[in-house]
Image (cartoon, rainbow, N blue to C red; front, side, top):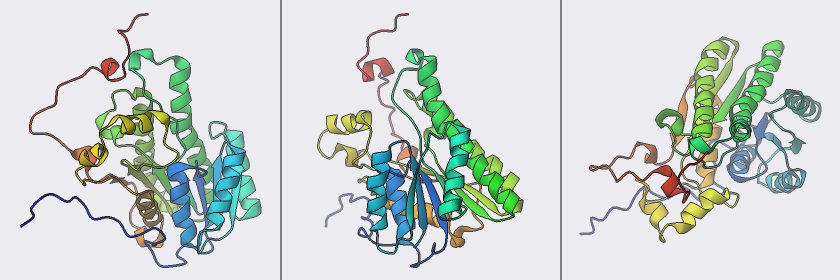
Length: 298
């Protein structure tokens, strides 16, 4: 009898929907960083369920291509793009103004845009720190605040999904800037869920594990390429990596009518990888050695 581990089953095929058709018909969903990678994958699942989409990002050409792809998703509503630097609160207000003029006030906000790169903490310059924290935490806050203010003024309910990271709990050696920012994002989920719940605004978090995709950053792609064939799967308790659509399905559920009593929660979608422990602790390799950097010198 074959008793070898096989890992978690594969997900349903591309094109499958996690919720009934038309779940988001007549609703507007705004996704930051929606022109590429996991943001686009999340936007595609909202589109499949009938949502009108606003995808925001900084690259005009990339957004234009993504708009065409998302509009072609079966079941999609209207799709438009907004060029925006979420670190600028005036530009953030412009995005909401444009959305209201074209499609209406967004019913759902997915804060996906972030910045990140590996770096030893002692090497981080002030500009490097700000580049990540200002986008990942402050930009998320500007988007969230604008969404909340407009719904509070209108007296309408809404739903926010913040994309987080598991090192908000565990710490992230090599990513002090991002880990600190993501911890702040997670705390916003918990704080605002209580503060805005009485007004009908849900706030949840969603943490992705390893979801390979064509827009991965070079440092992540390089790490996967350096691993032996199949190693990225063998290092996951699920014995496989995630399919981007699986993250999209989780996002559409958290913001849906079927999750109205779920708020203040951060859902980790990573096949339990962040909870993995070994019977014997692995050898400690200093971060600078892992990154191939020489000893620190001022």
